Amino acid sequence: MNTGKGKMVLRLVLLTGAVILIAAGIAVKDPAAVWTKAVKICLECIGLG
Image (cartoon, rainbow, N blue to C red; front, side, top):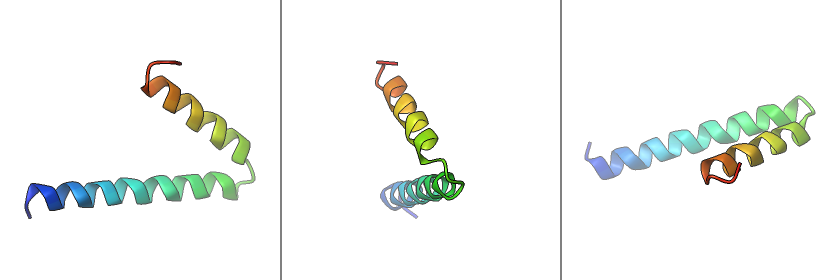
């Protein structure tokens, strides 16, 4: 497997995992908490939080 294909597989796995975790958070009837945590993580990643 070449590196280009490996990177694509890794991205797909991470995206799938993220979607599953978001869906699990929504399924437990707490989408506001999921959204708030996601915003905080994103802001911390870009250095604003």
